[in-house]
Image (cartoon, rainbow, N blue to C red):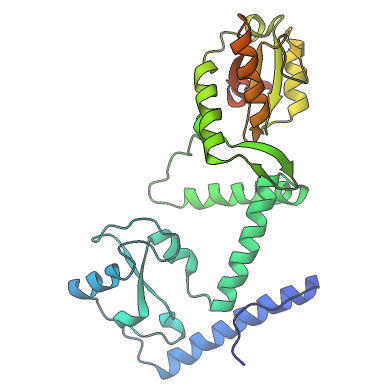
Length: 289
């Protein structure tokens, strides 16, 4: 019977056994291949590489990134180490990172890797207990790997623009009732109109001003609110004429932005918008110690 999907497993020890069996099967295939197959590799000609490149219109067949014709890797569909041949039909174009991570895993192993990876990625985004327990180990491993590079890279600085943030019209477990594209454009136009980017100093900026935070924050929301109050600010729970600043993070409330627009249209006093990232940066030396 042809297997078209990984099996359903409902016990922890069974999953460990399944992954171990797949690993062992792959090693057995590799050893068999060493014994019975001529292991000499061929060098692809320029014409052969062009044919492989054209198969996906120059895109990595794993992640879809655009590749350069002179700088892509020919990835074996069936790994060479487990019997795959060095023929054009057994190659697809890949970026170096995807080719390296794909290694020579069997199809079943790759399905498990994707399934487990998608689960972990979601848990980290959700900031669940499980995701946050694993996250430090992942970062530690990334730092260790980077130090082994011949030319270690500088860690990326994530600059968030308001157009990167998603407005929602209600929250569900992990996910939300997303605003329509027209509503997203409308929210962005309102934010652009009232967004301020400069926060002078902690004490002077927050003193006697009122704030409402909507959307997710990297730091604890209650902690940010406490710091605002410690510096003379006031925390509000709704958008009203008494509000000075609407602070937005990812998955911010579309309806709060619309309410802000309505109030600003009717009143001389304007409610301004600040990116939550700006607030976090202001208190970074306290929040992330």
